Length: 211
Length: 266
View (cartoon, rainbow over the protein chains, first blue to last red):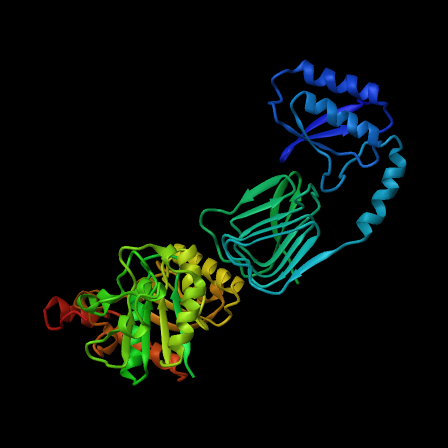
């Protein structure tokens, strides 16, 4: 079975349009039309599509733009980053992935994160201080809290299921890792040891650790 | 060296105005020149707690809009000549005063008084931003209750964003018996979450209510635990090192005496 030239995926804030960059504009046009017409009414007018292709030809981009706006859809041409691109040479894209994962950044905060604050980072986050109830920490990587965590923490927010959350006292309102959510029990116990939350066998588990 | 202090909390009903009135009277009793500013425009009540409602001629909005001089709007306290109140308007709303106005006013009053204490409205909107604008020190009042602590936390964050770094905490309306039995958050938990310097722990005391109705803050009353707690806070504000008091617990014998009518409540 040949790979589809155009794939539409539901995302967090709209739809993502993945296009095979080796295909010609004509092929793409036909494919998109087919997809949209096969299910009229599924995509409400004004739906935004995010183009998720890094190495697409400019003329092809423009063509897709026009085509979608004819149908009354919006296109976001500048996605934050091309997270996944269907490339005609998967091997080369794999090679590109490797150096990226080697370079690791970390955001360090040496203070208390109070209720109502939202800390978001593409990288991992290290907090030397408490995370109070009502605060939100969202990291692309892992989260390490040297203090008490009582807020909402989301590690691997862009899909990294290997991300972990560590805190000296882990008593958050909610733990989220990648696309999974776990909430704390209704009666929270005070933990006296550091704990780590991670995904194991398809669910979020919390285990004591030494450090 | 004078100090501009804002008393704030986020949540309503935790005792901002009561604290303001008590600190004002307490400082005045110690001979300091004090002015209290009510910034809760539209919901004025600091004058009631001080028993000065019937003496108000002009208010904060009149001063800001230049209708009268500051001196004319100040209401002198009945007992203490060195305590003045600048009441606010009951008919206007918070938009009548903006942060820059209050900063100018505070700098003006700072020249003549040792302490300028601002009573902040509840919430984190314009009224709050106005009230904190001119302050050097913020006193955050909270209660041993999850919602009050949550709001205090948010307020501390907001104060930090407005570059007010001198923040102190007063924990109000503590019920020692409930803390003892674990039904109420204890002081260590609150201090752990809020992580700012605590300068006062005030027990819940019916005398606070009765004295508010009379218009005489409880701070001068040595029979009242809350009165003594407020007097201690005044001392700490003036730089004294006073240990936190142990709360009197209702022991078996006091209960027994009460039951036989030997001891009056208190």
